[in-house]
Length: 112
Length: 116
Figure (cartoon, rainbow over the protein chains, first blue to last red):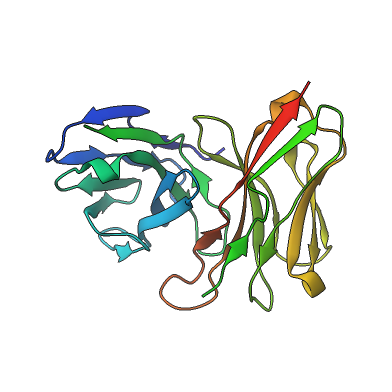
């Protein structure tokens, strides 16, 4: 089974802090994704990556950046956290486009 | 832009009753379609997928879905619901063009509650 591991289940940070969310997958998947999930809004794509050192903006990239230095790891960075970034963050991976994505358990991030 | 619509935000069914969750997609000559389930506090788990062929697709946990091209629908069904099926369900398709081709487009989800 594919395993997508997000480093933290719950995280509390303060406004203005730099926040790192880490995601690791163990199936050598090419493609990785970061979503945020908010009640009534469903899943919204923040960034995705098709290869090491490559990144593409999703639907809501503002206030976020990403890093993919190794194939198995995809990091989401909040450069200066704000309260409106309080949310559930989900990481996913897939071997190639049009295939099912495999999700981690999510990180519930609170910005105070 | 492509979209996925799940008309029901919240559905409540009695344990043992049948279930149908609705999903409509826009565009896609040959759509790839998926249903995911999310238990509280968890990530999304794939229930089933449709790529081509038989329009009735079987999935895990006793779920099935039927692809109807004429109605642009991919409804999820289960003949007898169990209390453990209480969760949020997401329908998804894949983007057909542009830089995001192959990425998933999700509906906003349907929350299922199960009465004892």
